[in-house]
Figure: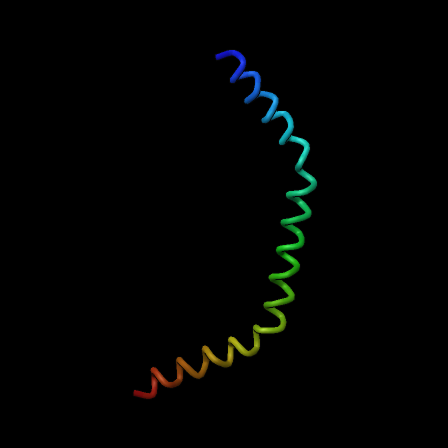
Length: 58
C-alpha cells in the first residue's frame, strides 16, 4: 500500500511543474476565440437579426 501512495505522490509532484503549459494553452484558446469572434461575429449577428425579424413578423 505504501508503494502505491509513493507512486501517487510522485505523480502529483511531477504534474505541478506544468503550469506554464496550461497558461499557454489558455492564452492561445482565448486568442483563437477572439479571432474567430472577430471574423464570424458580424455574420452571426446578421443571421440572428434575420431570424428574429422573421419570428416577429408573424
